[in-house]
Image (tube, rainbow, N blue to C red; front, side, top):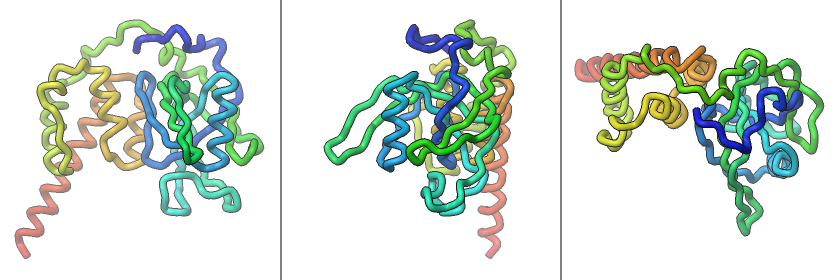
Length: 232
């Protein structure tokens, strides 16, 4: 991951971090996540972040009592969140005429939720432990020698075919391993638990193996379902 000169050093990462719980949404170090912010509590969170260190932690709810993508409304009990999330820095934002904020988060580093603090203007905050993921902020060249690229591409073609997704295969073939794996992990419609497994993968090679297995199992399951349908 190439470091931005505006990114904080590891020693300057904050102890207290606002969190944005979104089910099925994944941010990884080096990835970019556009967000459409419109709820008052998250508008307050975004404004506070813009006025300070610009950092927001993306986490996934363990359960989603409302059946939607976001954490429950303020009058409901807050959904539990996974222990590991990824912080991003707001690197672009714009206001809309109807009162929304369009922001882009650039993934920096993963963190562990130590404890949740009291709400601030309706949004959630946690005490964050970054110690396991110092390497997320390092700009050193990533070793991709452990990635089985041919198997990954074969799994990806089968997965795209079974999910109805399309892609520019020439561009995909030319995309470097790190960027390809990060992008696929974030944009593919994997289950929330699968997204979490990709987030918590130790390194790029493990993330590639995990994603390849997820896609292969999805394609196999779709094939078995299709075969069953033909018998009726």
